Length: 295
Image 1 (spheres, helix red, strand yellow):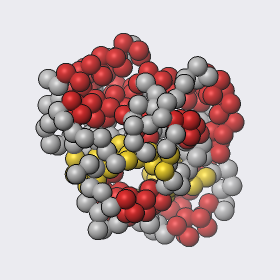
Image 2 (cartoon, rainbow, N blue to C red):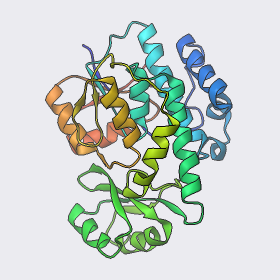
Image 3 (cartoon, rainbow, N blue to C red):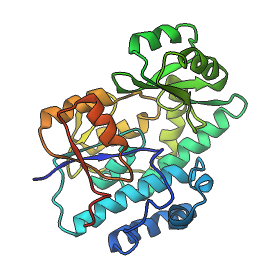
């Protein structure tokens, strides 16, 4: 049966993630195109590391995007039917955009570059970032945020799994406040306040940088990670992707949509980021892995 594909975001990069895929022509072609466009040695970093270089702010999202799209194309070349729909978590939505044919790989890489360039300039004098909290009820987290109005709840990954974005100077005391009652809490290795209102002021400049991109209708519907709605036109899918840097992620809304579709689920990327998040949100859903099943 055709599946619904789930494309993971940054944080899934790891040395060895390309193992077993270097012989697949469609995967190799995708990585070569990404390397040619960015100038980054993505295949070497994915295969050999070092991990610190792979996780560098500009390398990691490009590696995750190219690898996920490469997996999709390798599976399609092996005969996998088009999915019923696709969702992406955070920048994983860019992978879904490219897989669905809304924009070429190069446009998604340019979007990553635009976000990095403009965020770096905007927040050069004010360190920004994101924090995570696991095992804290949402009401308790929102109460704690009242003491830090400069912070924003940026991801609802589950009933008690959240990320928060904003100035590092406010994130650090929030983490200390949450740590005694949380299963885990800490800062994430990102330098931008993604999926929060601080990024909203950058959207006009990001749109201008990408003004020549002409989206086309997707080969299959995409699911917005903002509210779980189905995106059926190229324009609305691309607009959602550009705006996603400032829109919060609500994976619970995505899971509700997945449940309504009633199709098998498969994660298209390295690791089990979305397998875990989806299962924690809805125990009746199971997710297979395209990474773990050679095509």
